[in-house]
Length: 187
Ligand code: AMP
Image (tube, rainbow, N blue to C red; front, side, top):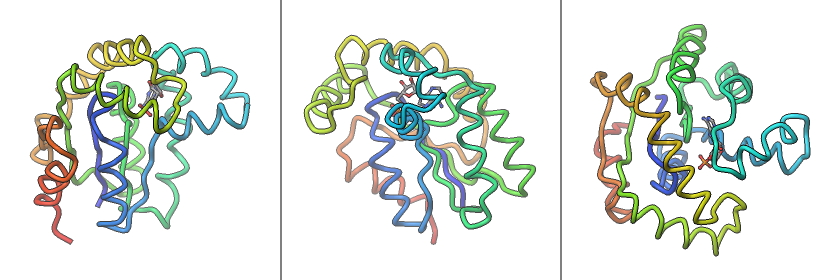
């Protein structure tokens, strides 16, 4: 079973992905984590993306597509993929379809965690204290939210027609969101 968790920054994608990793013995693919890892390593990619990441802008499709490829082609992870924060543009969504087709896989479930802006701001302020992420400043948070709203609506249109698409109220408490997600998973 391959799953996409979709939603704005601070929607709880990471938290719910971690739950799903346990639930389906899956593998979380967080493009945000992969990109932060590149910055930490000070790699070529890291150097190219650091400014955009800190400004709350999206990293180019080409870089993100390159980073996720190895997970999709890994036979051990086949049909156990949990996409957290990917795809975030129509081009990424089409690329993902293509890569999954090439490996005889498909997306089985798409969860859209829909959250109000004021709740996101509160959550990210809290996360800033706990995780100390450099892109969790208030201005960056708002920029990330605006980027998300602008860039991801075509992705939402792309997936919302699918019978596997489920919108979940991301304003709810974590456990309640998990319970709703759980109700769509039969393992
Ligand atoms: P996240 O950890 O998912 O909130 O992502 C943090 C930041 O990483 C985003 O604000 C973007 O700058 C970048 N990022 C993560 N995933 C993607 C993606 N799929 N496409 C483009 N940029 C991304």
